Image (cartoon, rainbow, N blue to C red):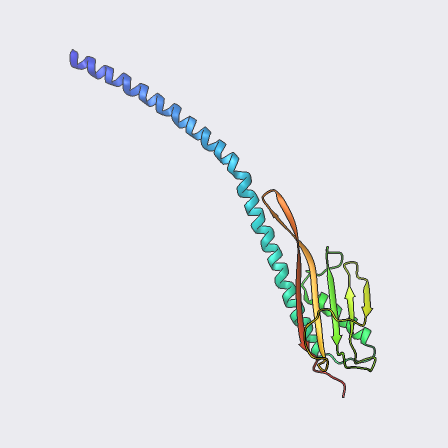
Length: 191
């Protein structure tokens, strides 16, 4: 009988230990849920930052491509008629090449195209630029888009495109100004 009594006692303690483990398992699951609830907003914020950073990077690549392609297009486009008409045509090409990245009314959108020839005296062969703002208004002037350090005797085309993009990480956001520029030697010089 004594052995049976010991077996019965062991069975009771095993049942008690099992109940205790179930209770602790539920407590652990509850604490894991609380930890997850605390960490989830931080993880989602980082994820949102990665997504908005990727979008900004994509816009920057589109701007780089638009500036490069537009400068190359303008370098081979002859100036027929007025220089202002030629500049407007090149600015339209920049907008079309940017695959939606430079659409009208995008915050900070600006397109600057310049035909640069400081030694030029003819109205169609001198330094002139157009700046197109976010709302589509164009301003013409006898300036360059950027100081490129090249000689006064070289004809060249400058294209600068710009826009803003938002970067949102954690609980703050920052507006980035994305800018790209390209300069190409003008190949269709008047004879």
